Length: 146
Picture 1: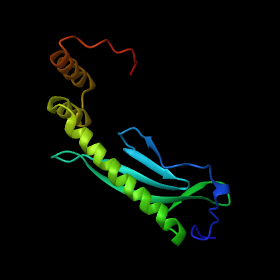
Picture 2: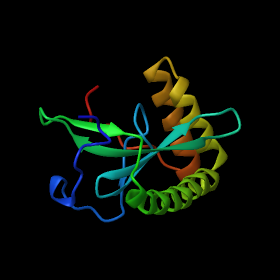
Picture 3: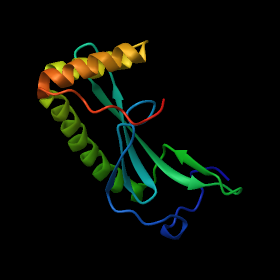
Picture 4: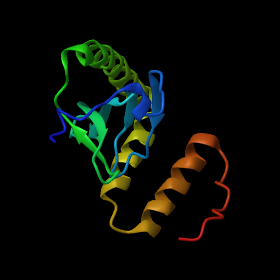
């Protein structure tokens, strides 16, 4: 049985209502929007002139062994849900771009540099220097062990 033939009735999946689930930015999606077993995954791509965002759509289904799989084809009745997720993804990518533009240039530059920073200690020193410059006080010592 192919994924297009798999029964995807609402009893196979936990109900979900157009919810946004923020994800960690590194090595994962910027956000995931869901409507039942259909999801829109927003991916952040760092560019020289700032981030860009791409969206992929998938329908989750369960195979005979119980493993969850993603399909990228949709039935006629699922297309309206996909279109509503596309509308939500469009709005969310605009929010993400707006959030990026609202950050002070120095903070944005530091974030972009952190993605390329080969040395964690030099990054921490620059972050502390910027924190002191922006707030007028030294940052609190980190409690996390790395």
